[in-house]
Length: 160
Image 1 (spheres, rainbow, N blue to C red):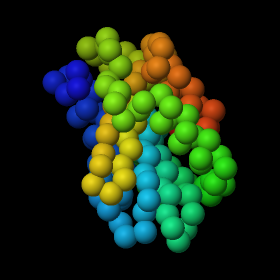
Image 2: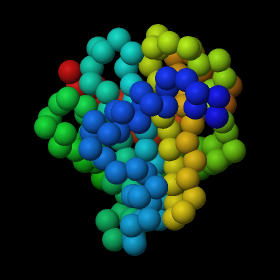
Image 3: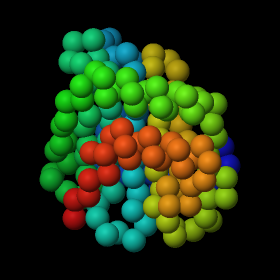
Image 4: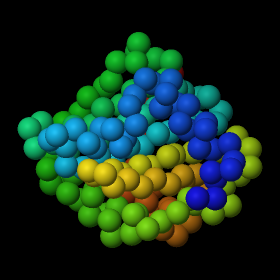
């Protein structure tokens, strides 16, 4: 991953830590969890709180999306139930892009000058993640950002 040596990974992981959330790999290993997606959003200009949205597909609970905002709402998650058809459409869009083989978006800025998304997927012991700067995204990275914007618009809701 190109950004592993840059500031992006520590910055985005710090958002997850500040929201007091377990790693996505740990969530995925829970007994009834089939699949987990997580989108961590860092807003470079601080126009709203950074956020972490975790989408879990569980055999007992169905599909649940929980969003936690850093420095807001006492870190209480906002929870949404996602119907199975919408979930399947989102998963199909992400998988059709070859997400599990994608790497970080090329040419990420070397300083905090644009919004960044850490997109993670985990199932069992498998895990994959990448970083996207949605405002600078082109090609498959723009299509991935659009799959999230269209499939899970809740993750883009901002809290100040």
